[in-house]
Image 1: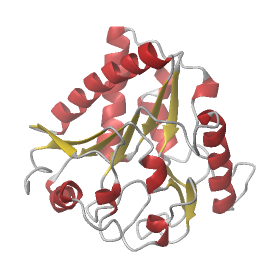
Image 2: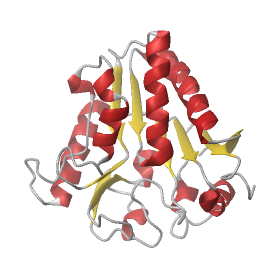
Image 3: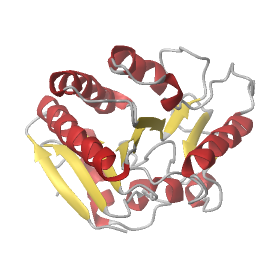
Length: 248
């Protein structure tokens, strides 16, 4: 796994702009090199702020979305279009405003989809969709960039300290039934899936997350701090505002 890089910015706005600018470059480079780009989206305040900036930047530079696939690292298991779903927020910030083929947007199933209220079935179905996109080269595609938020408790995606899902090294995607942060039902990629990404970018804003950032950069036991296990195969970047970087 790659060693973490630190990228500091004065505030959340500057952070979101910088991430969007660099993300455009990485997506264009991936398409130029391999003909396709796979990007994993995240939710949360700074994650959605990045997507809003990505919309503005992509429109300005004329980004071609026709060879870009969008995935999610985790999702709240709620009905379609629920305002708390990461997908709903991403559509409002970015997806409803860009010309991307619908089949290249891969949301995690909602609780009112064909799987009904079974979070494990939803996880299995998303695993299957990821495997198809991987074309036999692994359980999930080699994501070009995986965006992750970080919680004050050092969780990433819906992998919370102490939950058994943190240790799952066999499944690509799992259901979470006892999230300590509501809602309790969630679907999340596992750490091995996240580590398939060439680059993992951790987006962090605010002083309440400074200790989690410190633990993530230092590494250690993912059971206590799942962020410590979030690493890209080629590159890991902590994108921080000044407050989030306060303990480094």
